[in-house]
Image 1 (cartoon, rainbow, N blue to C red):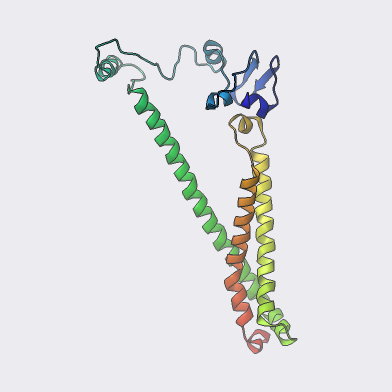
Image 2 (image 1 turned 180 degrees about the vertical axis):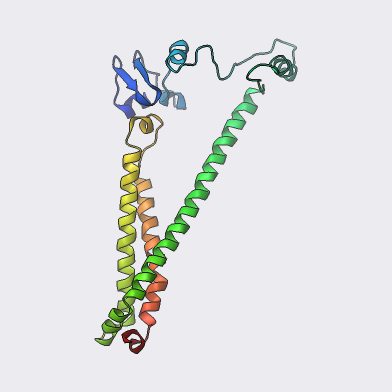
Length: 231
């Protein structure tokens, strides 16, 4: 029912999943059970295989050993029998398989965290470099401002304001691009959404990047000597 609510579907609708080139007719809803299955779509296996061009292909098989038979022996026998098959098997217990899936997923999450941190650092360096170049190109203008009475704090504030505006504009463009990227059907099916906390986090990151990136160039502009700036 969560998937139907997210996609705006109802029982009896004929819908097309563009990403899978799949057209289905919704015949029922999985009752609310508080499990992730409520966000999945169940499709007849044969129809899905034919649609995807994967007739007689399967991803995994669940095997239950007979009483008195060790699971490890069954796994070894299956792998031995399938060793020369086009796609050899890798038989494990259900718990080990689930743990492997979780480990892969958590590894992907850690990768995304590292890439996110690297992106923030690169963005911060880029913002600082852009503001520093802007300050250097307008050194004479800064000297004029200080000559007519602008205090160092005001000059610092002007540089920080420019840095914040540029950073927030970049953040707004990034949020807009993300909204467009996850606004398609495939993203909604996968449960990807741009939530309010995510938007606030992105805006906060843009704010911090603007402040951090503009502080040192602004400090340099505030402390430049008026005579040197006017040369």
